[in-house]
Image (tube, rainbow over all chains, first blue to last red; front, side, top):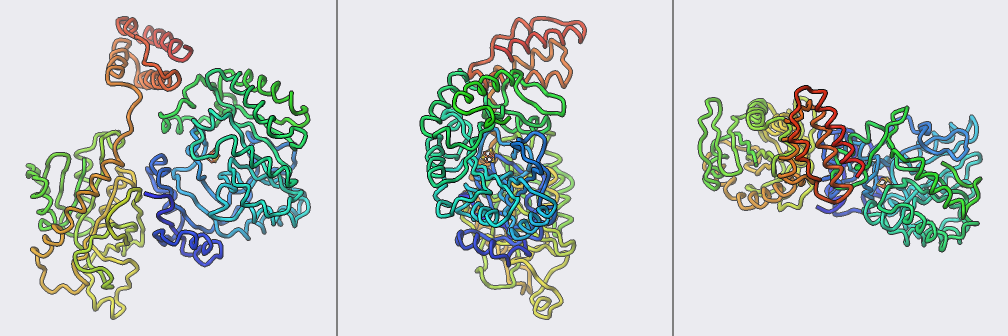
Length: 326
Length: 286
Ligand code: SF4
C-alpha cells in the first residue's frame, strides 16, 4: 500500500494550521481520528520493517518538554548549551544502520503540529544564554520539506533570534525547497555523506552521493554555512581504498576552503539498540562485524580507532585540524 | 495459517463450505479446520469473542511461532449494524479503528496492503443498539458501524500477534432496525463477500510470510548438531546461531564445514565452551 495511505490525527491536533497544511497535501489519504498519538505509535508488537514499506503519518500535539540536552555520544562542535528537539519523529529514508529502528517501536512518522510552542520553548531557553540546537535530530527535516515545511520554519525563526545557532542535518538533495530563503548566519546546513557504494547499499531511499554533493554546491554558492558529516563510517570490503576515493570525489566537487567544518563518527550505537536492531536486520551486513562494548554501554567496531584515524588523516589532507571534529 | 473468528454459525457456514473445513473434536467451541485455515465460532458478545480468540491462538501457537509461521494472521468477520445509510446492506468494510463503547478504549489494526474494501470504524457495545436508542440520544455513537465483538476480539488477538496480523471485516447487515433475526440473510451477506475476502486473505498471507533466514536448512541442521554434541547452554546455542548468521551476511559465503567440531564429543560443559571459542574465531575473524 502506498506511503501515507492513512493519516492518523489527534483530535486536538486537527485545528492547527500545520495539520491542515499537511492534510491538504494528501487529499486521497484515509483520515483516522485518534485520541493520543501513542495509541497508534506505541502499540505493542509493531513490525518496523513491514511498516517501512507502507509508512503512515500521525499528526499530534507535543506536550512539554520540547528541548532535550544533547547526548554525550553526539558531537557538540565545541558549543556550550547543546540541545536537541524533535518536531518530527522518524524519517522517510530507510538506512540499514538507523538508530531510530531501535529507538521507536513504530516506523510511522509523527509530525508535531504545535511548532510555535517549540519556538516559545527556545525563547525561554535563550533567556539563560546562547543555545546550540539540532531540530533535525530524530528525522530528516529537509527531506520532509515537501510534506511539512519545518526546515524553512526553523530557518526563518533562527534568523530572528540572537544567541541561537541551529544545525539542520540531512541526507536530502532537496535544497531547492529552501533555496528561496536568504542564508542565515545562525543556521548551519549539515549534510551526511557516505561513499556511493555505502549509500547505494545501506541508505535506501536516500539520494545518491552525487545528488547530495550537487545540493551542497548550490547551498555554498548561495552563501550558506555548510558542515560535512562523515558519519557513520562503515566497514566495507577494501574500506581504506573506498574511503580514500570517496574523499577525493567529495573534494573534487566541493571547495574545501568554503566548508565550515566537518565531523567524523565511526559506526556506534548503544548496546540495547544494537541488540534490538541487529535482530531486526538480518538483511544487511552492517551488524555482522566483530564489535566491542565500551564503558558506558556503547557498541562499536573492535578496530574503531584504526578506521577513525585513517579517515582523519585522509580528511586532514583537505581540511585543517581545527575544522575537524569527532 | 489464517485464523477466522465469527460470532454466529450462520456467519461461519459460508467459509466452512467454500474452504471445505472439517469440524474438529473440540468440546468447548464449534471449531473447524482445513488446509491453512482454522475457524472458531465464538458466540455473541465481546467477552465471548475474546475467549474464543484466546483459545484458538493459545491452542495453536507455540512460543515464538507467531513471528516464524508462514502467513499467520487472524480475521474477525461478521455482520454489523450501521446508523447512517451510507453503505448499502451487504457492504464489507475493513475496520481501521475499533472502539469499545463501555471502556472507551480504541484499537488500531495496521493496514499495510492494498484491499478491495471500503474502510471504516466500528464501535463494540455490550448490548444490542437500536435505531431509536440513537435517535432518542440514549446512545451516542462515535463510529461508523456498531457490533458486539470486535473490541474483545482485537484485545485478545493483540496479546499474541502484531497489528498487521489482526483484521476485522464487518459486513453491513442492517441499519439498527432488525425486528426478526434472519439467519439466511446473514449467511447470504457473508457469502456475497467471500470472493473479495479470498483475495484479501491471499494479500494478507503474502504480507505476513516470514522473511527467509540466511541460514539454509542444511546449515541449521549442522548447527543444531553442533549445539548438541558440544552440550551448549541455551545462551551459547543462541550465540552460535547469531555468529553463523553474521558470518554469512558479512562474507556472502556459505558456512565453513563445522563437522570437525560436531564430531568432538564433549564430556563436560567447559570443554564445549572451549570448542565454541574456536568456532567463534573461525566465524568472526575469517
Ligand atoms: S537519514 Fe538518518 S534518520 Fe533517516 S533513516 Fe537514515 S539514518 Fe535514519
